[in-house]
Image (cartoon, rainbow, N blue to C red; front, side, top):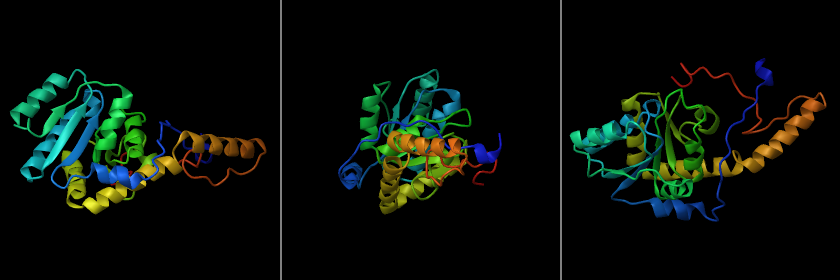
Amino acid sequence: MPAKKCFKWGYFTEVKNFENIDIIINRKSNESIVSILWACRMIDWKHPEMAVVLARKLRDSQVNFKLRFIGRGPLESEIKKMVSRLQLDDYIEFLGSMAPESVRTYMEESEIFIATSDQNEGWGATVNEAMSSACAVVASHAIGAVPFLIKDGMNGLVFQSKSSQALYEEVKWLVDNPAERKRIAREAYFTMKNEWCAEIASKNFIQLAKALMAGEESPILHGPCSKAPIINHTNILF
């Protein structure tokens, strides 16, 4: 398909209309403990082990944090053994599976959300949900949603897929820069509210469809239905 005929599309999760997003962001903030969340099935290509390695590196850097895992899967037992072996039990909490509404509640209470999947993650709706919950998201560059949703350094941070060191460096930067952490969380929320939500997607779709049916040039849009660039995951950022 010609590149000029490719347009952005994806998943559109609920975006709550918070009257004052700064209240949500400030409520998350805890000067003594940084809250980090990982929420996925515990399977190999979602790389839950990277979150444990991150925890070890943060502990060794004397960061005071709490990392919560949401989800179950075939790697759960192995991950829990890894946590015990590395003596990280005081830093990591396993919450198991829960309803989507409860996951969103934990997102709304967490400052940082980490998405560690590799290229097998076709989209990754938890990225949408975490951004909508005003989390500062740190995500693998290979996740399908990332090049569409995250502008690196503006409304989230992107790291080289499968690189535990790159993940650590991005999270550590957020830990060391609380004002930037809040700014990124705020920008993430407004990206979802003002650009990547079902209401905007439907309006853009109608506008694009009308133009194409009339034989006109595609309109200049932002977010859904805007022109999609060709993405080369081997060198997208690096």
